[in-house]
Image (cartoon, rainbow, N blue to C red; front, side):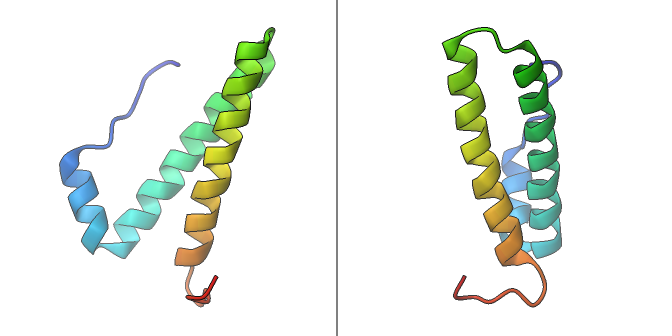
Length: 78
């Protein structure tokens, strides 16, 4: 998977208290995930790759849902 960008414990601590930072961290994570999914899709040649892509898509949907709920004006009930 190329160069990994690790989220540190201090990043997680900051994200708990800084909504803007948390949203930026989630957005960057989603962008990296989608880029890697694109690479996997282009290189997919077996069932194992398909499983990884499926798992990645599920994670991308979860991240998108989190970002949507954090958006200004988003309903807290969503």
